[in-house]
Image (tube, rainbow, N blue to C red; front, top):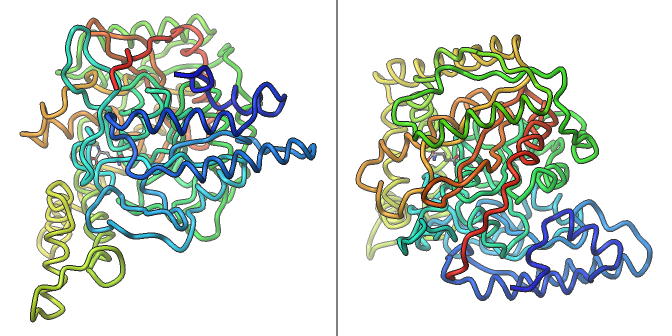
Length: 493
Ligand code: GLN
């Protein structure tokens, strides 16, 4: 592994700008690392030429004395949920195999405009549905991490597992993720990296394959809080093409980083002490409180009484929206078409969808269609929407007493691939701490805290008030500085 692949976003950007190395050298180092890491299965397609072209553009700008942009010369991985012009975009589903968009998503375009280049399209759970990266049509992603003394393949988390695996393995300095119910934070926690889901509406959803539109939000995944701040600044911003996009200026999050939390109150929600949460995770949560106290914050107890209803409500709202969003994959407009001999239009729809969607996606479509159907709508969907409101109100009340909330990101560390497949409910439970902030549309971040007795990373989660990404990043920075997390997976790939 060359030295350059150890660098993160800020170090690469600043090093290219001051001439310590060229952007081309960086892109070449990462392209090589990506090519050598096929065993991780983190990428669905690689785009070395995209990374090189952006690097050459950055080097040329530097030669002309021009501004390189806040991501100038940084090659990144792009979750394969973002439409990329001329580059296959699949959402890790067979039904979109071969689909090459004619347009660029707003978020990816903003990253290119800020000077970044693309190493490739990252693997994920199919249509971002999953918590382990086992629902991809293109095979599961492997975490670079393994339990000490074991060769068992571990989950990188989901759905942004290609992103987490690539960043943790240092084959990408950073990657995009999306988070509908934890898909940035849970994989970040599983792999010892940082990831922030901003307030709903900060990043445009235009050109992002839709899962559950009222929840979907893009965000960065990187190895430090600073790198997340930089990349989020490049990704965020109002977009007239997304009706839910926030019409607000993008704050200077990088410049605003400040780990001094004097005068800040951090809330500890008592309902997050749930049965089934790993003892070592509870211990790291205690440690997190100490770190934030040390940074100057006051720790206060808060209550989020509807927490236990958040997960069941999410698993009604998200599949309901998915069943509607995924109706567009009909064999006519995108990717796969299965047209049996002599078949009519209805047969084509049925055959295409039967062949194109994976089991988990079909399960979500079935659940979603059921909860939206006449006779069940009020019993399920309406009730779930009411719970969503109550969960939001819980946070509003808590934020009258505190500036941010500290919680674990996940109830357990990463698990071996295959170990939770039998029981979807156990898999869904993995998002129990992540989903409430998603339902309420709040900014939330996972920061690595420590490794457990198996040598696997554990993450801490900071949830903030609406639009207060700065507060979340700053609390994250305070944790990062005290945790001093520098563990790295031993290279086996
Ligand atoms: N794991 C959750 C699910 O399967 C969340 C996914 C996500 O945030 N995209 O729905």
